[in-house]
Amino acid sequence: MEVILKEDVEKLGHRGDIVKVAEGFGRNFLLPRKLAIEASKANKAVIEQMKAAAVRKSAKEKTGAEALAQQLNDVQLTFERKTGEKDHLFGSVTSSDVATALEAKGFKIDRRKVHLDDPLKSLGEFHVPVKLHRDVTAHIKVTVNREGGEAGV
Image 1 (spheres, rainbow, N blue to C red):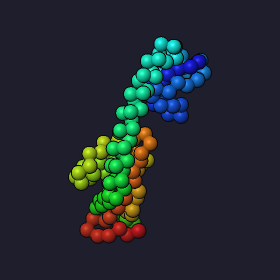
Image 2: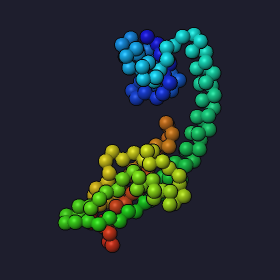
Image 3: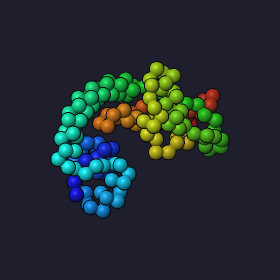
Image 4: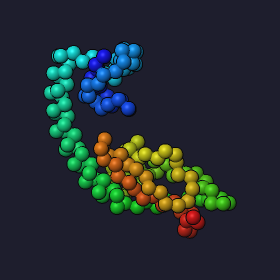
């Protein structure tokens, strides 16, 4: 079965892609969740027009994201947190903390674009990825120090 994706679907494709999927996956998962529509001739023609407009828009967004990534790659953030014995942090540094610190430096980044697998719960230096565009990811250097001192790592 051929379907046209209405949203990005992980491990399948991006919005507007025409992909072949199993009948059951298409009818029982993609179509009911409105993640895709059937690939009829009329739908394909509409999607081709939308794709052309989307390519132009995406190219413009990607250029802006690459410029922002160049600026963000030079950013260093430092957080001070209280620690207990064995340098265990009380609390943690989350993606929301990183986004707030970036906003204080003049960058408007949504916290959902800051990709931390888990909150930072130890002292040291970390490289935190920030996904700005589907193809553009910046890496910010984040340092977590002991409150009133240097990192004990």
